[in-house]
Amino acid sequence: MNKEEASILHGLYYYREIVEEEVLYSAAEINWLVHHPISKGKEWRGTDGKPQSVENETDNYLATIGATSAAAARPLAYLQASGSIRYRKDGGGFRIAVTGTGADLARELDTCFGRLNVFYKTHKDGVLWFVATVLLSLVTTLVTLYAS
Image (cartoon, rainbow, N blue to C red; front, side, top):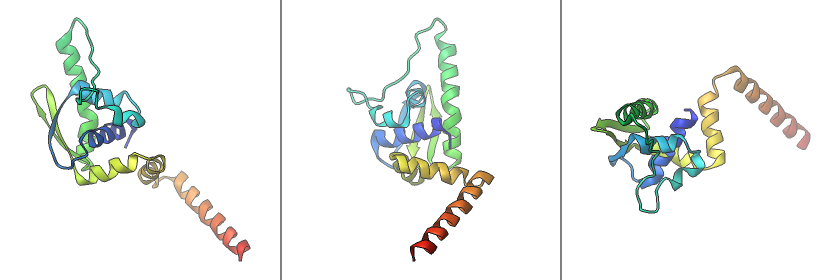
């Protein structure tokens, strides 16, 4: 899971904190989550109670909306494939429901240690993490040996 997907999932869950309920979001609202760090995800709800959005005022409004929608759909497709959300296009927006698995992951992303744990889980199959695991077990063995 990359930074964009983590930010989207965290913001979607903490906006409502309800599992399996579909809510309609625009692509500009999803892009606000993409452009802000996870720590700002709880601030996605504006003062009016609605999600904040990234609006672009340009001459070619339809092209901008299409590009924004495509950019927002990529991380949503990955989150759906991983089982964290269910979504479908609905007109100019997305109907998104956070699954139970996604809610658990979003809660874990809420803390620094949780984010480290998620990072480790997604990257633990590499050689670097194998070496780190071996070194950690060696240090643990040495500490236990000298402590007793």
